[in-house]
Length: 401
Image (cartoon, rainbow, N blue to C red; front, side, top):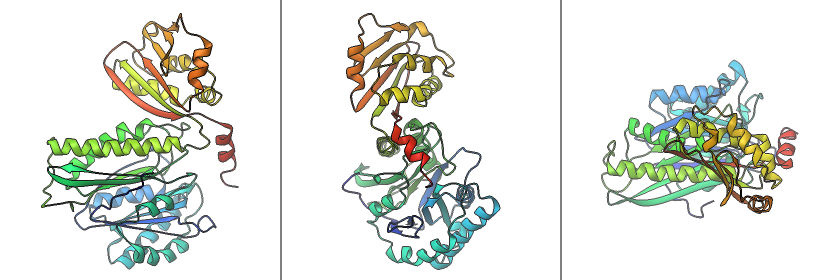
């Protein structure tokens, strides 16, 4: 995690404990946003979406959000009408204490599915959260939203934007139930730049597509996934809104995307039980959709991932995964595959000069590049995944015990 997390003017944060984990650790995070802040968010595509997802979507449409409230340890998913009522009760309790409307609160939850939200415990912690609000509590909040994460995930950058210093800071959580499909975790990112909502929406969509939509731990997506981008407009100078397609807009998009990629990679590096960080590069495909289909086939394959854990250069598993992908155009006679710099397949067959020793040496590394060259077009994309270990099975087998 970055040692320096720059405060974002217009954002104050706090962390506290509701006792959801039965131990002395924070499990609540609160973001307080300035009145002029603009908010964009993307949410899970899982049709069993959690109660807080439904409410956050509805409140976001009101356009008056001032607070983001996150609880860890309980997903409030699969809880039916009571789950919705519980989440709304927490929103009303916070709004009452903060002097705002309930629609100004966006709730987020993460943790065990199918258990009712500990409303009373959360409500009792709200005064502490409001009293502790500060601009420099990003580290505390990064820790508070963790579940099976072994370490917090946070990144921050400052850069010159139209001759003034701009800041982007963000935190994320996630270590399991991760698959490329929208956000696949929780992430909260803020900038002090000024952006109209449509521009903010476009920047977030582009950043998520290049980052959180391109990571995979186990092939599962959560009921609670969300990624939020806030623009406070409280940066240096007059801070006039950045216009669409301007050089400043493109620069900000690049910075937000780079920060999201960093957070996404942090999630994969902290994946449950993982021992290897794997980059899957798909080159010269016929389309972006084919890149996604081919990368998904590799990154979600249990056989590929267990071979990675064993450092076994069983390249036939990669070949088989590519063959069963949903790529619209795949000429197997043109496919080349590399492990790091070792060519293992050329034109759909084992490379003539490939040796098992070369493949084994590549697979022994902690960081492995799997490069697929399709020789069918100009589309390219990069994805990130990990191996699948005994520890992953143990962590998830014992998740509720």
